[in-house]
Length: 255
Image (tube, rainbow, N blue to C red):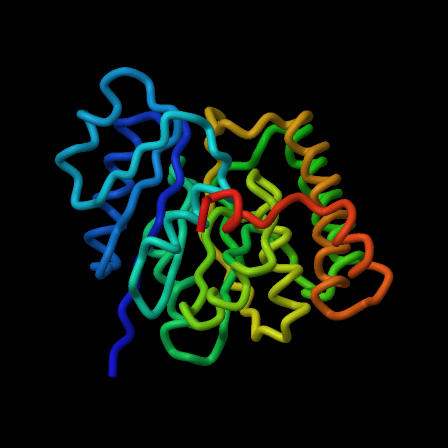
């Protein structure tokens, strides 16, 4: 019996032409049951320019953050498998399909695309500073988190709807560090996690700031480690969570 697939593309003031091409490529390659663009704080005309795409376009008049946008998008889907792909199209549709496959098969609960995997194909590299900071971040994440991956933040992941129903109750990160918290909590819950090498091409126009957002992600990494320990039942971290943690994403969304 085949499993239905829903795909979310979070987008903040995107390059509309590039996003349009990418969404059509995803639709043609994946033929998903549902394809949804979560569009934050669009510039004038963006909504109209995306109206003809084979996707539902949900518009927020503010910048929710990547994590909040994906969470809201996942919760709006009614499919067996939930996936997301970053709007800049750095991960081509064929690679997104490869990320989804291990979850569709039922062998894994969650799959993470990886541009740092030894078998990944990097068609163009990031600038030196971004690459250095990214490598340092990935190394530190391997030291602090249970999921031992080469890459924690590649913009393509998939999760079964059943496992998502468990994960979503623990997520607090609304921004770029959502990926880290997702994987940390997945590990704490005993999820079966696949790391899938992808083809990847850097997009210099990405909305990720190489310095400020990386610093925020280092902070997010420490938070993710704490959240994972609290989920696992560490008494000290449970007490800290009750005192210092931000509200859950699903609570901030009014759900």
